Image (tube, rainbow, N blue to C red; front, side):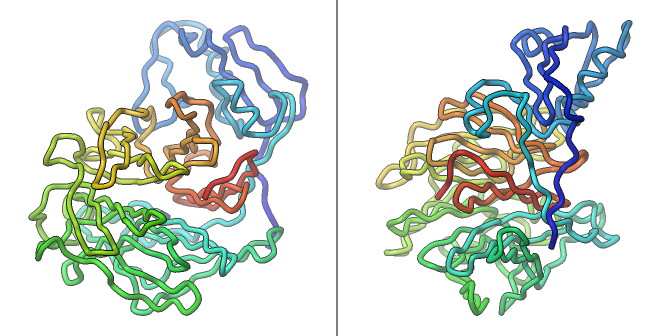
Length: 404
């Protein structure tokens, strides 16, 4: 299929606005003056929308600032730190850079409030990516199990082919995914009749097998994401999503948490979570490239709750669990759902309107934008290409780095 590129600003020379923006054909650089003092006398912003949708309240001469916000909204990249240009592979805002749209998902069914594409993973043996689809139900409905996942065949990188494929037995509301030893491991939420579990899938035959589904006889609540170390130690998150948000599973009998499961011995234990006050609803997971640190996202009760988590925590990985929890970042739009890292220790968080990119210290370098009104959900690396899976589309961008 043909690639469709995002719409960029017209190819005009770089312009410096008095409010502190530097605007190029596809990049807007937000300077310190704009970032320190918002250039309007009275403003506010809902947590569910990105910064370029900040409301201008009572005051005069809104047009200049509104134009600046529109410039940011129409850009493909927002730069806060010059190091972001190195990642993009351009020397400054005057060079054009593309985010490609390679697929638009069909609309969700009528019972769905929105669609979600999570659990994205690249399988080099198949030269393909897999991603799960979920339909967040409207109030009064329950989440429905979907028999398929999406497969993006990139055998011909210039013309990716995205189709539905059908695991057998089917997954029951799959979320996170991770490739380990040639297999794909899914964290499936489960439902009233199928306990939440880790499921191993052969990416060639699509045959599936449940490999973990209980904590000493307890059902897990709603597994969300999973990562596995090179030594075969898995960490996975377990939250209240199925019961509290999607009305599709039994009442939880466990605190929400992050579990360490040694696949070599079967040992299982909770290593962080609501029981010790750190996480209300843990979500996404990502190892640092050397697997000495684990990044974990915390959602809170909902992504629209001003008191919600919206935090990425970083922990040291020890021989028996996790230690030294620190706040790595706090999202300003929605919450960071899927997260990934690269070989240079940057961290990528999928949020409302963009993928936010941080350096190893948690400094926000910039944002990789998705289409207007779209929400990034998760990502996957294919060499130096970052594939972005959102509610509505699949995007990709070529960067001057790579992931695992």
